[in-house]
Image 1 (cartoon, rainbow, N blue to C red):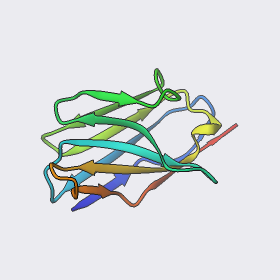
Image 2: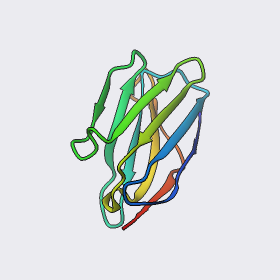
Image 3: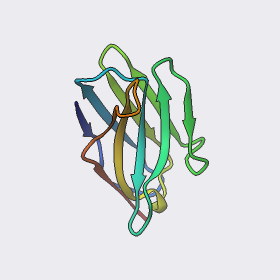
Length: 114
């Protein structure tokens, strides 16, 4: 299973970024994005099922949008109105149809300057 992430970078506060994660090698029931800031635990940012049902962390509701393209096996995270506290390494996650089917991307750095 391979998850290839792209789209991270440095942006000023109030700016936008779009993360992409292309999956191959496994069917999935859901895909999502997690993040881990400096000195913090990894946390869920947003997740979406294959059928398009999405859920978000309270801290990003109204600012971030997760979508999935099932034909391309790609999940996107559109991040608007970014804040310095959004700075973190963002990880793509794929969940398959068994408990063991839980895969992670290598992570992409998002840095928001004030």
